Length: 140
Length: 242
Image (tube, rainbow over all chains, first blue to last red; front, top):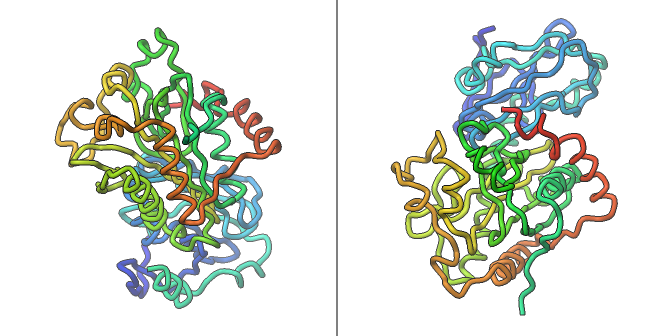
């Protein structure tokens, strides 16, 4: 799952153009009715070395905003919130053995889960790369 | 005369209250201390690596786990535990992990300034005094709010820490292989006239200046926290999970 797209850098963080974003620094790639999700480059930089990932449960329904997992780093713990409602179809089990993939390749090998989207209208609530770049810029 | 923070709740209930108040996304600060003793692990810490379990059991020191990361701390008489609840909406700096830490460190720095102690900072999140670690802080985050909390050793024997907590497996670079004794300091060691009550008063004043009013949990908060103690913080499945 290797991203080969155009990406820009804002506040030292890479922002690929082929995904959407949430305000809490998650990326969402829409693919055939599913949302592949992960944390952004900015989020992994902020977290520091990730040491443990509690993955979502497969085949569980979630609403947008539900806590579906946890990421633990040397600096903090943070929830993985579902950016859209739906059913969790797949999780990246490699993260259980190699949580550092979230730091090394957040948009590729460090993907977290795939959700079958229940309500496509929720996608409109996500941020475009331009909007996310602006939000990051304003935060710095 | 400054009043010491309350010390009558069990430590596991205090840890649960932190989670309850973070979930409520309230804005404010809370201080507490204890009359008992507990080794409080970070969420990912390993008991076998960071706690002298036999010694803790022999001396009745509880082994508990908090919701944030970081190394194990000893919570006992003579420390002040602080929690800052930082909702992103009213404190935009808290939208970022580093911003939330910076905010909390500024509040702590102002409190120590009041005590005549001009503190420094060592990454990832230690407040230092004269090259020694004074306070380690940790953070837990929800989508709309952050909790930054820590333990201030006011009048604490560092040898007591050494007795219950072996040197941690991961050390910040500035520790430079120093033992607990050589690496840590306490407020009392640097300011012999300091008391828990005086430190608490300085912390309260500094927090209030930043708009972090003192939070007194409601009856409902306490009830939610008691449920969490039942399910999580008072439970070996959580406390000894790693």
